[in-house]
Image (tube, rainbow, N blue to C red; front, side):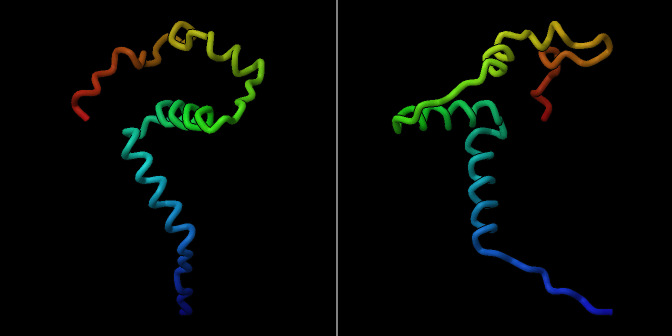
Length: 81
């Protein structure tokens, strides 16, 4: 049986390390990371383009739209994690 050696790329390894550091810094909260990244881009002077669909989605109340029988995230106890 021929065993193929595992290919390791230092650039990919560095990207994984950075991703893990960001996840730890923002406690795996993608929304918090996104807000920080957007704020950083604005500080650098970048203009952030928003699509009409994005603006529309920000006004939706996703909890009201949830189906019966599906757990409401506001009722989940996160202290036991």
